[in-house]
Length: 349
Image 1: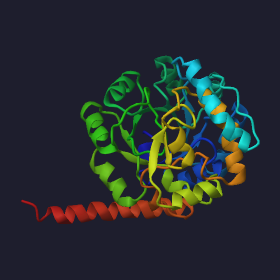
Image 2: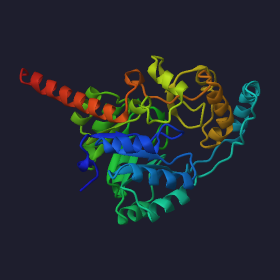
Image 3: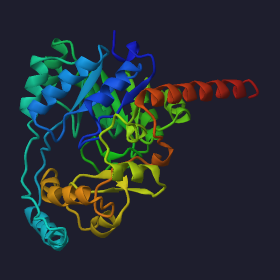
Image 4: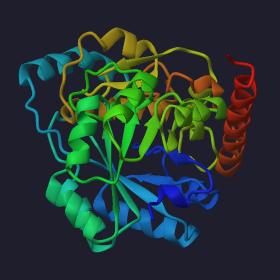
């Protein structure tokens, strides 16, 4: 029996690295009948192990862990150095020095080893597709494997690797693009229909889904569940900063940008994004390491003009509610929306 079939509500909490996803949030979502997720990206292996233990202490319901795959691509070192020179005056104004634009694998081998040694119900992957051997090793230990895709051909490739489910992420989603390359522009509904036409695996729809009618829409379009991230950013269990919560509660537009991390990600548009997006090079995690001290200073100072404020396009619909209430209200809204469509359909034809 798949994990998705055990859920009381077809709602998955998107893994949001950098602070918003916490053990408290993952456990609350799972306990409420959805599927909570831990974000393993940008933390060390010891923290991941501790987070997994905390979720288990809070709930006996299934949950997942999301891993960042190492980016196999090279970078243009000259372009990254030029970007560093561009940002240096801004960093000096904030009293910090830019970080070293080094590469790295986000301790992927160590985190994978930890999850193989102490299996969790679900492991998902972003920034590419896992190796076939990794998929097999996780499944042998009883872990479901989910792959994140942002284009139809990637879903076909993921199915060929033996994964259990595919997360279909549209361009409306907040945070980083989950596939490689990251220059796709598929909106969720067209992408979901294209993937469903050629893939028999359970699909989890992600991208701009915040309320019940949006969940109903993706269920009707072929998804087994909806993945919500921005909807949980204002929950008390989330680790979102006050500045981030305020931005999500506002009505400012979002945009995709490489300016903060070197990889395309969607956030609330601010001065930093508008001023530096066109100059930002491709280069993750190099640009992330470069800007990290500057972004930390912005968070420290509550400076929303500089900080990265990841959010999906429908962020004004997010509410300040406990995660369990978000689950129940969104699920009820989806049922009501589907019932209304069925009622209207009796008048068709």
